Length: 337
Ligand code: PEP
Ligand code: MN
Image 1 (cartoon, helix red, strand yellow):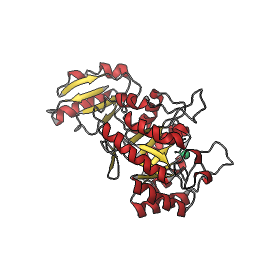
Image 2 (tube, rainbow, N blue to C red):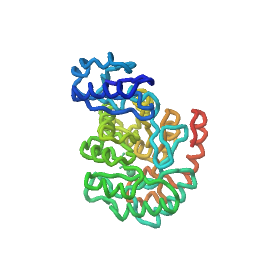
Image 3 (cartoon, rainbow, N blue to C red):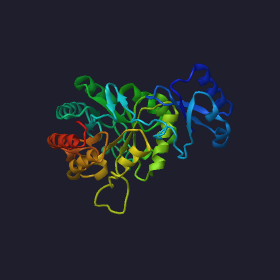
Image 4 (cartoon, helix red, strand yellow):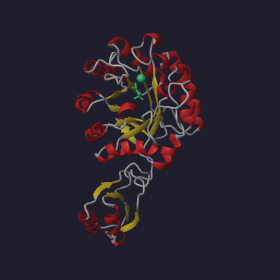
Protein backbone atom coordinates (compact mmCIF):
# COMPACT_ATOMS: atom_id res chain seq x y z
CA UNK A 1 0.00 0.00 0.00
CA UNK A 2 0.94 3.63 -0.49
CA UNK A 3 0.62 5.84 2.56
CA UNK A 4 0.32 9.60 2.17
CA UNK A 5 1.41 11.39 5.32
CA UNK A 6 0.11 14.82 6.16
CA UNK A 7 2.59 17.68 5.84
CA UNK A 8 1.74 18.50 9.47
CA UNK A 9 2.60 15.01 10.80
CA UNK A 10 4.66 15.10 13.98
CA UNK A 11 7.74 12.98 14.52
CA UNK A 12 6.00 10.80 17.12
CA UNK A 13 3.00 10.26 14.83
CA UNK A 14 5.34 9.27 12.00
CA UNK A 15 7.14 6.85 14.31
CA UNK A 16 3.81 5.28 15.22
CA UNK A 17 3.01 4.70 11.54
CA UNK A 18 6.40 3.06 11.06
CA UNK A 19 5.99 0.98 14.25
CA UNK A 20 2.55 -0.33 13.18
CA UNK A 21 3.88 -1.27 9.76
CA UNK A 22 6.85 -2.97 11.43
CA UNK A 23 4.48 -5.08 13.55
CA UNK A 24 3.02 -6.66 10.42
CA UNK A 25 6.45 -7.13 8.88
CA UNK A 26 6.00 -4.64 6.04
CA UNK A 27 9.10 -3.21 4.38
CA UNK A 28 8.99 0.58 4.14
CA UNK A 29 10.26 2.65 1.23
CA UNK A 30 10.15 6.43 1.17
CA UNK A 31 9.21 8.18 -2.05
CA UNK A 32 11.95 10.56 -3.13
CA UNK A 33 11.15 14.02 -4.41
CA UNK A 34 8.03 14.39 -2.29
CA UNK A 35 9.54 15.62 0.98
CA UNK A 36 8.95 12.19 2.46
CA UNK A 37 5.19 12.59 2.57
CA UNK A 38 4.60 9.35 0.66
CA UNK A 39 5.78 5.92 1.66
CA UNK A 40 5.21 2.44 0.33
CA UNK A 41 4.60 -0.41 2.75
CA UNK A 42 5.26 -3.73 1.10
CA UNK A 43 4.19 -6.87 2.85
CA UNK A 44 1.35 -9.33 3.10
CA UNK A 45 -1.63 -7.48 1.49
CA UNK A 46 -4.24 -8.82 3.94
CA UNK A 47 -2.13 -7.92 6.97
CA UNK A 48 -1.35 -4.44 5.65
CA UNK A 49 -5.06 -3.87 4.97
CA UNK A 50 -5.94 -4.87 8.54
CA UNK A 51 -3.23 -2.81 10.20
CA UNK A 52 -5.54 0.20 10.53
CA UNK A 53 -2.98 2.64 9.17
CA UNK A 54 -5.60 4.98 7.73
CA UNK A 55 -6.93 5.63 11.25
CA UNK A 56 -3.59 6.82 12.57
CA UNK A 57 -3.07 10.51 13.21
CA UNK A 58 -0.96 12.25 10.61
CA UNK A 59 -2.05 9.85 7.84
CA UNK A 60 -3.88 11.57 4.99
CA UNK A 61 -4.63 8.65 2.68
CA UNK A 62 -3.93 4.97 2.17
CA UNK A 63 -4.03 3.61 -1.37
CA UNK A 64 -3.86 -0.11 -2.04
CA UNK A 65 -1.59 -0.85 -5.01
CA UNK A 66 -3.02 -3.59 -7.14
CA UNK A 67 -0.14 -3.82 -9.59
CA UNK A 68 2.70 -6.22 -8.72
CA UNK A 69 5.21 -3.38 -9.11
CA UNK A 70 4.99 -0.88 -6.29
CA UNK A 71 8.03 1.40 -6.29
CA UNK A 72 7.92 1.70 -10.09
CA UNK A 73 4.23 2.66 -9.89
CA UNK A 74 3.32 6.29 -10.46
CA UNK A 75 1.22 6.15 -7.26
CA UNK A 76 4.47 5.87 -5.31
CA UNK A 77 5.86 8.95 -6.99
CA UNK A 78 3.26 11.12 -8.73
CA UNK A 79 5.81 13.47 -10.33
CA UNK A 80 8.20 12.38 -13.09
CA UNK A 81 11.43 11.03 -11.60
CA UNK A 82 14.57 12.87 -12.61
CA UNK A 83 17.42 10.41 -12.85
CA UNK A 84 20.72 12.22 -12.66
CA UNK A 85 23.86 11.02 -14.39
CA UNK A 86 26.36 13.41 -12.88
CA UNK A 87 24.82 16.80 -13.58
CA UNK A 88 22.67 15.49 -16.42
CA UNK A 89 19.02 14.73 -15.67
CA UNK A 90 16.96 12.16 -17.57
CA UNK A 91 13.22 12.85 -17.40
CA UNK A 92 13.33 16.63 -17.69
CA UNK A 93 12.73 18.99 -20.63
CA UNK A 94 16.23 18.53 -22.05
CA UNK A 95 16.68 15.19 -23.81
CA UNK A 96 20.05 13.48 -23.36
CA UNK A 97 21.39 11.64 -26.40
CA UNK A 98 23.65 8.62 -25.89
CA UNK A 99 25.77 7.91 -28.97
CA UNK A 100 28.75 5.83 -30.01
CA UNK A 101 29.68 2.51 -31.52
CA UNK A 102 28.03 -0.78 -30.62
CA UNK A 103 31.38 -2.13 -29.35
CA UNK A 104 34.58 -0.47 -28.20
CA UNK A 105 36.98 -1.73 -30.89
CA UNK A 106 40.19 0.20 -30.25
CA UNK A 107 41.40 3.38 -28.57
CA UNK A 108 42.00 5.54 -31.66
CA UNK A 109 38.60 4.95 -33.21
CA UNK A 110 36.72 5.35 -29.96
CA UNK A 111 38.38 8.67 -29.12
CA UNK A 112 37.70 9.93 -32.66
CA UNK A 113 34.02 8.98 -32.60
CA UNK A 114 33.59 10.41 -29.09
CA UNK A 115 34.72 13.84 -30.30
CA UNK A 116 32.42 13.65 -33.32
CA UNK A 117 29.26 12.68 -31.43
CA UNK A 118 29.99 15.32 -28.81
CA UNK A 119 30.32 18.00 -31.49
CA UNK A 120 26.95 16.96 -32.89
CA UNK A 121 25.29 17.35 -29.47
CA UNK A 122 25.47 13.97 -27.72
CA UNK A 123 26.00 14.19 -23.97
CA UNK A 124 26.77 10.54 -23.23
CA UNK A 125 29.06 8.07 -24.98
CA UNK A 126 28.10 4.45 -25.50
CA UNK A 127 30.29 1.45 -26.35
CA UNK A 128 30.20 -2.16 -25.23
CA UNK A 129 33.23 -3.70 -23.55
CA UNK A 130 31.27 -6.83 -22.62
CA UNK A 131 29.15 -7.85 -25.60
CA UNK A 132 26.17 -10.23 -25.46
CA UNK A 133 26.62 -11.96 -28.83
CA UNK A 134 24.33 -14.62 -30.24
CA UNK A 135 27.36 -16.62 -31.36
CA UNK A 136 30.19 -17.57 -29.00
CA UNK A 137 32.53 -17.17 -32.00
CA UNK A 138 31.64 -13.49 -32.53
CA UNK A 139 33.66 -10.64 -30.99
CA UNK A 140 32.94 -10.67 -27.26
CA UNK A 141 34.35 -7.25 -26.38
CA UNK A 142 37.65 -5.92 -25.02
CA UNK A 143 36.66 -6.30 -21.37
CA UNK A 144 38.54 -4.07 -18.92
CA UNK A 145 40.73 -2.62 -21.68
CA UNK A 146 37.55 -1.39 -23.37
CA UNK A 147 36.35 0.14 -20.11
CA UNK A 148 39.57 2.06 -19.66
CA UNK A 149 39.37 3.38 -23.24
CA UNK A 150 35.86 4.63 -22.46
CA UNK A 151 37.10 6.33 -19.29
CA UNK A 152 39.86 8.02 -21.29
CA UNK A 153 37.27 9.28 -23.79
CA UNK A 154 35.29 10.72 -20.88
CA UNK A 155 38.42 12.54 -19.66
CA UNK A 156 39.00 14.01 -23.11
CA UNK A 157 35.44 14.97 -24.02
CA UNK A 158 33.46 15.30 -20.80
CA UNK A 159 30.89 12.82 -22.16
CA UNK A 160 29.39 10.47 -19.57
CA UNK A 161 30.01 6.77 -20.21
CA UNK A 162 27.24 4.19 -20.69
CA UNK A 163 28.36 0.58 -21.01
CA UNK A 164 26.86 -2.85 -20.55
CA UNK A 165 27.42 -5.17 -17.62
CA UNK A 166 26.44 -8.77 -18.29
CA UNK A 167 27.57 -10.61 -15.21
CA UNK A 168 27.14 -10.11 -11.47
CA UNK A 169 30.88 -10.77 -11.09
CA UNK A 170 31.69 -7.70 -13.21
CA UNK A 171 29.42 -5.15 -11.54
CA UNK A 172 32.14 -3.77 -9.29
CA UNK A 173 34.62 -3.56 -12.16
CA UNK A 174 32.22 -1.80 -14.54
CA UNK A 175 31.18 0.59 -11.74
CA UNK A 176 34.79 1.75 -11.48
CA UNK A 177 34.75 3.04 -15.07
CA UNK A 178 31.14 3.71 -16.09
CA UNK A 179 28.68 6.48 -15.25
CA UNK A 180 25.69 4.35 -16.27
CA UNK A 181 25.38 0.56 -16.09
CA UNK A 182 23.53 -0.80 -19.08
CA UNK A 183 21.57 -4.00 -18.54
CA UNK A 184 20.90 -5.37 -22.00
CA UNK A 185 17.76 -6.84 -23.55
CA UNK A 186 18.99 -10.37 -22.98
CA UNK A 187 19.48 -9.79 -19.27
CA UNK A 188 16.25 -7.93 -18.52
CA UNK A 189 15.13 -10.88 -16.40
CA UNK A 190 18.51 -11.82 -14.97
CA UNK A 191 17.25 -11.21 -11.47
CA UNK A 192 20.59 -11.69 -9.73
CA UNK A 193 22.16 -9.09 -12.00
CA UNK A 194 19.25 -6.72 -11.35
CA UNK A 195 19.73 -7.10 -7.58
CA UNK A 196 23.44 -6.46 -7.90
CA UNK A 197 23.12 -3.31 -10.02
CA UNK A 198 20.43 -2.27 -7.56
CA UNK A 199 22.88 -2.53 -4.67
CA UNK A 200 25.53 -0.62 -6.63
CA UNK A 201 23.52 2.63 -6.50
CA UNK A 202 24.83 3.63 -9.99
CA UNK A 203 22.35 4.86 -12.60
CA UNK A 204 21.04 1.87 -14.54
CA UNK A 205 19.90 1.87 -18.15
CA UNK A 206 17.55 -1.10 -18.25
CA UNK A 207 16.72 -2.18 -21.78
CA UNK A 208 13.47 -3.91 -22.57
CA UNK A 209 13.83 -7.49 -23.68
CA UNK A 210 12.70 -8.57 -27.12
CA UNK A 211 9.78 -10.46 -25.53
CA UNK A 212 9.14 -8.44 -22.38
CA UNK A 213 5.59 -7.37 -21.55
CA UNK A 214 5.05 -4.00 -19.88
CA UNK A 215 4.31 -5.51 -16.47
CA UNK A 216 7.31 -7.84 -16.65
CA UNK A 217 9.47 -4.89 -17.62
CA UNK A 218 8.32 -2.77 -14.70
CA UNK A 219 8.86 -5.78 -12.40
CA UNK A 220 12.47 -5.91 -13.60
CA UNK A 221 12.82 -2.22 -12.76
CA UNK A 222 11.26 -3.05 -9.38
CA UNK A 223 14.17 -5.41 -8.65
CA UNK A 224 16.59 -2.50 -8.99
CA UNK A 225 14.40 -0.04 -7.08
CA UNK A 226 13.69 -2.44 -4.22
CA UNK A 227 17.42 -2.92 -3.75
CA UNK A 228 17.71 0.75 -2.90
CA UNK A 229 18.59 2.18 -6.31
CA UNK A 230 16.00 4.65 -7.61
CA UNK A 231 18.22 5.69 -10.54
CA UNK A 232 16.58 3.63 -13.27
CA UNK A 233 16.21 4.72 -16.89
CA UNK A 234 14.10 2.48 -19.14
CA UNK A 235 14.80 1.95 -22.83
CA UNK A 236 12.55 0.71 -25.62
CA UNK A 237 14.77 -1.10 -28.15
CA UNK A 238 12.33 -3.11 -30.23
CA UNK A 239 10.50 -6.36 -29.72
CA UNK A 240 10.14 -9.54 -31.79
CA UNK A 241 7.23 -9.80 -34.15
CA UNK A 242 6.20 -11.80 -37.21
CA UNK A 243 7.68 -9.37 -39.70
CA UNK A 244 11.40 -9.61 -40.30
CA UNK A 245 11.53 -6.60 -42.64
CA UNK A 246 13.16 -4.80 -39.73
CA UNK A 247 15.39 -6.47 -37.13
CA UNK A 248 12.84 -5.70 -34.40
CA UNK A 249 9.60 -3.77 -34.15
CA UNK A 250 10.18 -0.53 -32.28
CA UNK A 251 7.21 -0.44 -29.92
CA UNK A 252 6.75 3.28 -29.42
CA UNK A 253 3.34 2.77 -27.84
CA UNK A 254 5.11 1.63 -24.70
CA UNK A 255 6.54 5.13 -24.19
CA UNK A 256 3.23 6.83 -23.28
CA UNK A 257 2.13 3.64 -21.51
CA UNK A 258 5.20 3.73 -19.27
CA UNK A 259 4.64 7.41 -18.59
CA UNK A 260 1.10 6.59 -17.56
CA UNK A 261 1.97 3.66 -15.28
CA UNK A 262 5.32 4.79 -13.92
CA UNK A 263 7.38 7.81 -12.96
CA UNK A 264 10.56 6.38 -14.51
CA UNK A 265 12.11 8.04 -17.57
CA UNK A 266 12.11 6.01 -20.79
CA UNK A 267 14.42 6.58 -23.73
CA UNK A 268 14.24 5.15 -27.25
CA UNK A 269 16.87 3.12 -29.13
CA UNK A 270 15.93 3.17 -32.83
CA UNK A 271 19.26 1.55 -33.79
CA UNK A 272 18.47 -1.88 -32.30
CA UNK A 273 14.78 -1.12 -32.82
CA UNK A 274 15.10 -1.13 -36.60
CA UNK A 275 18.45 -2.82 -37.31
CA UNK A 276 19.12 -0.65 -40.39
CA UNK A 277 20.66 2.83 -40.45
CA UNK A 278 18.14 4.11 -42.99
CA UNK A 279 15.24 3.87 -40.52
CA UNK A 280 17.13 5.21 -37.51
CA UNK A 281 16.60 8.95 -38.03
CA UNK A 282 12.85 8.78 -38.80
CA UNK A 283 12.25 6.50 -35.81
CA UNK A 284 14.39 8.73 -33.58
CA UNK A 285 12.14 11.63 -34.57
CA UNK A 286 9.08 9.50 -33.82
CA UNK A 287 10.59 8.51 -30.46
CA UNK A 288 10.95 12.14 -29.44
CA UNK A 289 7.44 12.93 -30.71
CA UNK A 290 6.04 10.02 -28.66
CA UNK A 291 7.49 11.50 -25.48
CA UNK A 292 10.77 9.63 -25.20
CA UNK A 293 13.06 11.08 -22.53
CA UNK A 294 16.21 10.66 -24.60
CA UNK A 295 17.77 8.52 -27.31
CA UNK A 296 20.45 5.89 -27.75
CA UNK A 297 22.04 5.86 -31.22
CA UNK A 298 24.82 3.68 -32.63
CA UNK A 299 27.41 5.62 -34.66
CA UNK A 300 30.44 4.24 -36.49
CA UNK A 301 33.03 5.81 -38.77
CA UNK A 302 33.16 2.79 -41.13
CA UNK A 303 29.96 0.83 -40.53
CA UNK A 304 30.86 -1.95 -42.97
CA UNK A 305 33.95 -2.75 -40.86
CA UNK A 306 32.21 -2.57 -37.47
CA UNK A 307 32.80 -5.53 -35.15
CA UNK A 308 29.08 -5.55 -34.33
CA UNK A 309 25.85 -3.89 -35.51
CA UNK A 310 27.39 -2.09 -38.50
CA UNK A 311 24.15 -2.27 -40.50
CA UNK A 312 22.33 -0.10 -38.00
CA UNK A 313 25.16 2.35 -37.30
CA UNK A 314 24.96 5.91 -38.58
CA UNK A 315 27.93 7.65 -40.15
CA UNK A 316 28.95 10.64 -38.01
CA UNK A 317 27.70 13.10 -40.65
CA UNK A 318 24.31 11.39 -40.73
CA UNK A 319 24.21 11.47 -36.95
CA UNK A 320 24.91 15.22 -37.00
CA UNK A 321 22.16 15.80 -39.59
CA UNK A 322 19.71 13.73 -37.54
CA UNK A 323 20.47 15.79 -34.42
CA UNK A 324 19.64 18.97 -36.31
CA UNK A 325 16.23 17.64 -37.36
CA UNK A 326 15.55 16.29 -33.89
CA UNK A 327 15.90 19.74 -32.41
CA UNK A 328 12.86 20.85 -34.42
CA UNK A 329 10.79 17.87 -33.29
CA UNK A 330 11.84 18.38 -29.69
CA UNK A 331 10.80 22.03 -29.80
CA UNK A 332 7.42 21.05 -31.28
CA UNK A 333 6.71 18.79 -28.27
CA UNK A 334 8.03 21.18 -25.64
CA UNK A 335 11.42 19.55 -25.15
CA UNK A 336 15.01 20.47 -26.01
CA UNK A 337 18.03 18.59 -27.36
C1 PEP B 1 23.65 -2.77 -27.38
O1 PEP B 1 23.23 -1.72 -26.84
O2 PEP B 1 24.64 -2.82 -28.13
C2 PEP B 1 22.86 -4.01 -27.17
C3 PEP B 1 23.45 -5.21 -27.20
O3 PEP B 1 21.56 -3.75 -27.00
P1 PEP B 1 20.34 -4.76 -26.69
O4 PEP B 1 20.63 -5.33 -25.34
O5 PEP B 1 19.14 -3.85 -26.72
O6 PEP B 1 20.30 -5.79 -27.77
MN1 MN C 1 24.59 -2.93 -30.62
